[in-house]
Image (cartoon, rainbow, N blue to C red; front, side):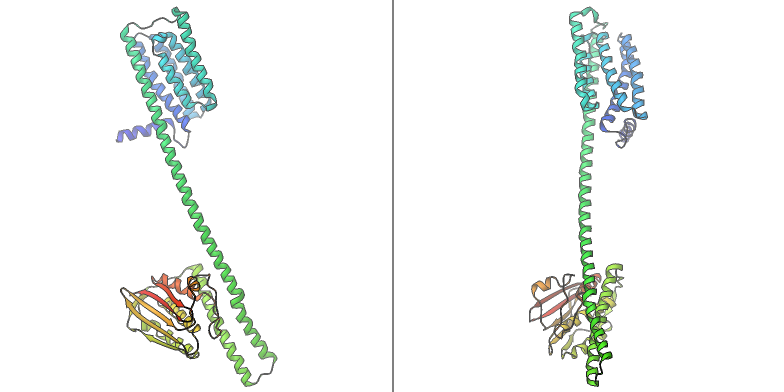
Length: 442
């Protein structure tokens, strides 16, 4: 096996690599080498069977073919050497026809091999010419032998010499045809595999381009969403703050009116800061990525202060925020991310729950997960709204007390939950409330 590999490497080196020469040129080099080996065999063989002149002609032809091979393989003079090789091959067999007993010898058989090899290497537009040239040589030789038989004498010493000459010629023809066809098929299979691999590579490249296009569309959509938020959702409350300040500056207000304006101003400022915080956090997550620090987290240590803060906000809307959970439960999470997710979900529940409503936060273990559940009896959502809830398609809406959102809170919840190895989903019906589920590893 190793010997075959070495022989194959040597043959590739002699005929030329696929990156250097076309298939036709590599076949031409192969034919030159085969012709050189065959002529090297013919020189002593013809001499031994009593054909010294044929042996001399073979020696001269061997030298010429060697020069042609060298000029083509190593000097790059391909077209010229192919023409000389083809012309010389036909003329050599014409001479061989005369010197080697005409139709009584193997020349007709070798001329058939000659045209087969010629058709393998010459350009398509030259093939008809060389076919006619080859046929004319054979017909001319046959006519000369038929009408002037004395010009083509029998050159064999005995029957045995003719037998060995024709037998060896046939073997050479079969071997050369077998090699050439095998070489063609091997290269055809190689080209077919290469074409298939290129097609697959192009297909993979197209898929990659499509994915990149989808990603670009997503990025463009995110950019448009961001610009929309900056242009509207953030600009509007800042304009309100400006209007309040202008009102206070231009008009003399009594203490009651001033107190009302200051309250409204404080509300708008808080909402603006909340929106700005979410906007900056989401933008940072999209541009720089998020550094997740997972560890064992105790629910009481992580969420107690967050829940107490949301309770005070809920009380201003006369909303009851109750908890049903084991404070000693431990989960695997990032503390900061977990606080943001739960704060957003509780804030969202309070926002869309009417005065006097109820929000429940509970935690329960379900297999190897801890389900953190935020349930309210607020306005609820339609199925269409639920489907687009965790995407940039979601639009910000006003709460039951006219609270304004930025449309990014739930998207942040989804991204941060999944970054921690958790899951988030929602169940809701219009006017029947909403329940958010966050499943985190225990």
